[in-house]
Length: 262
Image (cartoon, rainbow, N blue to C red; front, side):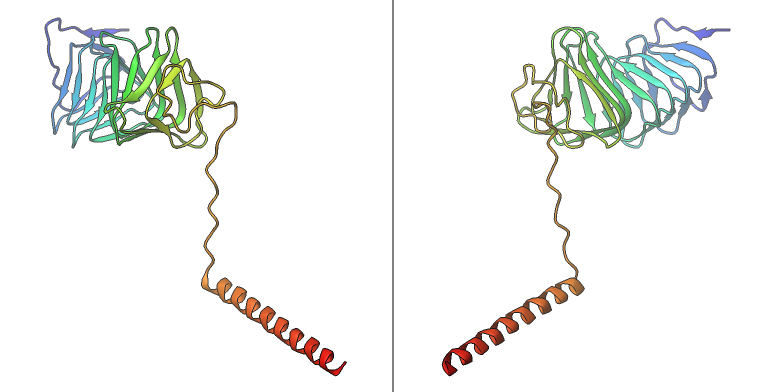
């Protein structure tokens, strides 16, 4: 049985300790103030293209978050996405606490030709897909991490991954054990700091400043640092060197004495 709540002219929807179980809720935006909480659980929350501002505590559980314009977690706010799915067409911004769980966050085409990923987040599954060559801007100076799967695909013109301040780097880290599905993308000023990304592909329209991306099928790994020696090992090595030097001197004196006797 499907239940719903529709408010055609609602600009914001305020909740305080409201659980939504197996319900579909439509709204033109979501404002969750400090001290308020919302649990979607197994329900579906559709914002009909409106933005969400989270200053309270939001829990998606196994629910769905659809039709989101921009999603913003304010300082002091929190969002736990559990095993849910969230799809948005605007910016993703995290200035508070984001708990990914095993969730999937999708950034898709919408009214704006670009979306920004602001602040720093660790996603379980992150999907950046566009049919129109959309631009995904990573906030300069910040790192976005992905633990399970990273999907970046231009299903039409090549999508562009770049930064909010041209020339100032941003970072994308696909953690060890994560998988990637990347195709038809250009990258500018975004460095891959975890797994090497798209090693079999070439940069489609980026400015070429894309360390850790692309290549000829060769994954570039950073050099392994030589471990520092502890004091006991240093003493052993030093003693060995002194003994070898003493032996060399003794052998030299012995050979000199034999030569003189001869």
